[in-house]
Length: 455
Image 1: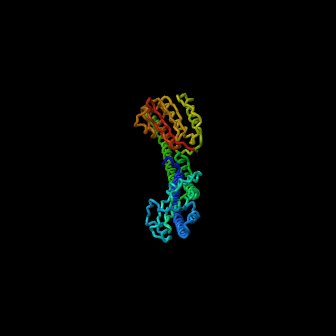
Image 2: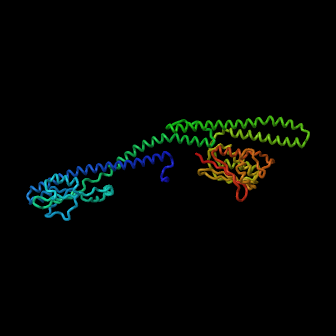
Image 3: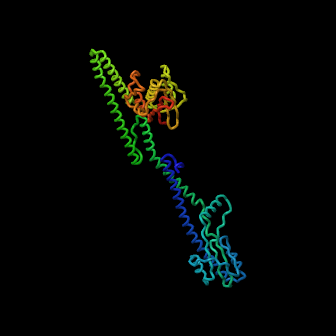
């Protein structure tokens, strides 16, 4: 059932509403037509019974030589007569409680034993459907069983036998189709207008949430629609404001810490110069240099977090090619296969920095970098592979923490202080994606950037 339902909320609501309307209309029309058929059948019965009583009265009064002329005059497509010398054999099984038998006996002043009536059943819905299909395709109409068969003994001892065909033709199919189609058009149009009014704000809210998840600067969403949707939009706006304030406060705090560390580091460096022991002085200055690098990196990280670079559509293939070309120009072993034009909406400078950090990490610690771009489907994948020693499974998530350096893969001589992967992941998550690192079976690491496909 799920395969046949539309994917959108509006489509599902319209489909379910229209299906419920069709079912209810068919049920309602079935009940109404059944009531109509019963009422018309009752009227038709009274009419036919009065005609039968009139024919019996005329035959009892007319000479025997004129009886055939009388029944020929009253014969019709729905009412046929014939006269026989004997009662019908076998006689039909009569229901003494039949209202038609009681009414005919009340119209004809004769001995009840001289009146025999057998009432058939009304056509089934299957027979009515066959009649409708035959009428629609201009085919021969199906024959219905006689609705009423009766025999009445005349005064001269002969029996008047008669058959009444079905009381009425089935109602035309248009009697059901036209009301149902009219209700579908009226109700469907109203339903579409109402649901679009409800779902339009939801669509705007979803687009704003997606943009916020990609790290874009999203303006507040204007509340619209029913009360529940307005409440959801207002909650989103509050969340957006709190999230922006939290990120800004954290960034300011990090920048302040990095900035304030400069003064004591400079003061300690001046004091270290007065230490007479050359070995101690060298070690202290080395430690202060490392602290200086960490403070500068913290400031750079804070600036990256506070960056308000606007998003725009770029050729992702060209962006990766530019990063890899720059690394190759520095005589680094970087390989990238041109995959053709691929448009993507992002913050290009930030995304370029994230990819560059991964490529540099692969070149420094894995001797080479092979970059692959796959997509676009629902997601875009950028993979950077190297031939290095890899890392232990327990450290795969830890390497993304700021200022974390693994001894087996990093050394101070590389100049890194453990922020490259943290910055890269922060940038990618700001685009609504993520980074995953795993050891390759043949050796080395594979870092994959997963980005959601956007419009």
